[in-house]
Image 1 (cartoon, rainbow, N blue to C red):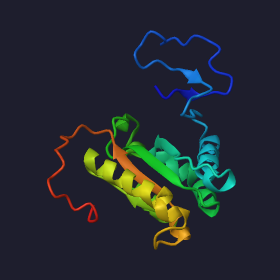
Image 2: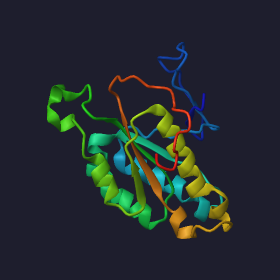
Image 3: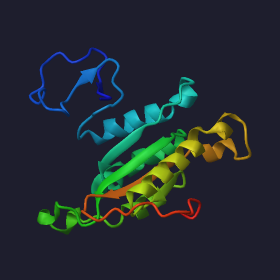
Image 4: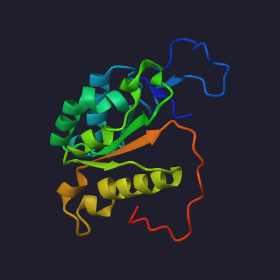
Length: 187
């Protein structure tokens, strides 16, 4: 429903147009879909993540990529994004023992959180359950764009210029309900 952003709209009929989740482009789109163009994708992430400073318009970029190759191929670009005080979420998807292991261990990611954590502007999380992701995203939004980001509160503005890296998995596991009285600070 958010659609892919295209300033000229969609000028063709997509082959999946009859499906519920059909590919759609729109000048009002909210997603940028650069495909497997890692340099361009991180550049778009950086542009959106610095819009709060360059245009006075806070945007919340969410960069989803194949975790195994993400920081190996784009780590330097994320360091440059940090130097520009980019804010946003980096989602390392398909981590763990993925369904892609038919090509060997080169696809079995277990180290991307370590690579991500070498960047001092990246707050790295490796959540186990879906409910944890919601709390981490909320905390990230409050940290990057909350009241203290506009000068209120006690946290320094430099502490707002962070990116959150979350490792997510594609392995089928049971997702328990969120426990009552969950310690979200501990999480």
